[in-house]
Image (cartoon, rainbow, N blue to C red; front, side, top):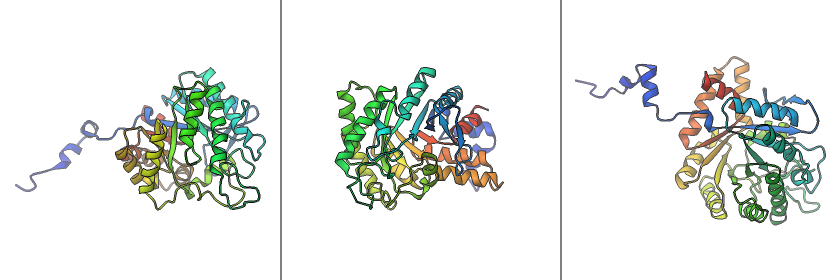
Amino acid sequence: MFPIHRPRRLRTSSQLRRMVRETVLTTNDLIYPLFAVPGQAIAKEVKSMPGVYQLSVDKIVEEAKEVYDLGIPGIILFGIPEDKDADATGAWHDCGIVQKAATAVKEAVPDLVVIADTCLCEYTSHGHCGYLQVGDLSGRVLNDPTLELLKKTAVSQAKAGADIIAPSGMMDGFVQAIRVALDEAGYLDTPILSYAAKYASAYYGPFRDAAESTPQFGDRRTYQMDPGNAREALKEIALDIAEGADMLMVKPALAYMDVIWRVKEASNLPVAAYNVSGEYSMVKAAALNGWIDEERVVMETLTSFKRAGSDLILTYHAKDAARWLND
């Protein structure tokens, strides 16, 4: 009686397949990134990211309401300031663009979780994630002085209403520095979502168009991780956990699902995966050319991130995915 085992029996109908499905994607898994810019009534599409816009605060609020109505529990805010300088003033000033957007969103949609990206590259005149040595054109960020900027930025974002602080600059000790600063300022209950394993990736290209954060010289390889390293990610997450991180992120997601799996296995903290701009734009470009079925590819990809171990997925596909899930 060959074959005795017939796994296909459990694939014979859509209902059976649903019943035995191991990994289920829901809107609760999604976080939608938004880019805030100064001005009013601004919605400027990012050329390299079809369907993604730089938005003024009033438009950010409109998006936040739509996101909430779709059942997506949270957004992450990035900012493009009116002026940039060596001290990244726009990142930590109380009237910074992310601070304004966070306050406006929390007033309009109080139950939506607002995550503030806590980095400096969008706000520095040179496009790097912190202070540089005067005259140094290599892009080697000065670690400890930069921690002071990150502390000020995190506190100002929490003060503005951000529910979660998400440091992304890959500075050594940034989680502990921010945790101490938040606690001293009275924000003991504000969690930290650390970009714990952030790689120096070519997949970030379109994001740098959206955030206007391309380095003016050098690159970020002295602080972001080498794409060839996986064990180093475990070292980074162990340090962040010891320093007080509440959640951990792996970025990018698509080419680093093995890292997501390792991080999930090594930690009991929630793990986020960032489905980054280059991953998004490749899918959109292929879909616009009619080469792929966009819905099926997106849903398969997002499900694979969850199957790999991610509890949260930051993705520019979030609104579309939510609509498809809700249909």
